Image (cartoon, rainbow, N blue to C red; front, top):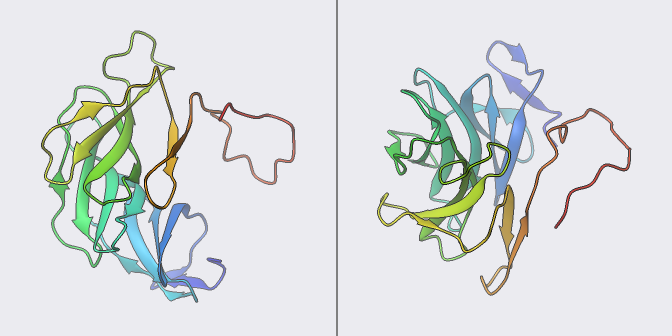
Length: 178
């Protein structure tokens, strides 16, 4: 899918965490966020801020991208216009926040965090409004991944993760609970 992707300085080597909306792909590369047409071509850099950005997720209407950003301390949840611009910080937690998805209505961003946990390996799921107000914990004991049915009537989540999920060409039997 990203095989035809080029940057001004040459061919890219490793992109991660792609998300697709319509004919655009958002992804993380060298600590910044980029977009590219699904057909390939020249990538557009969305962020050039000091720090790192990762885990881009398009909003359901494609107008925004939520992402995890590390600028001045703990990794937090931000949103930025899909065409680029100034990010808005949505979370101010002491624990690391990792963006997972948007709610299907586009009103909240779901993320995992180690705040309110006793063991660092068991993150909990939270959501925050798109303006940064009313953060709340989801009523689950823990979680690392989440996805929603299109109409929002059901949520699928993974209670625990596999830290080796990015193994190259791995075909083994390691699994996680869904």
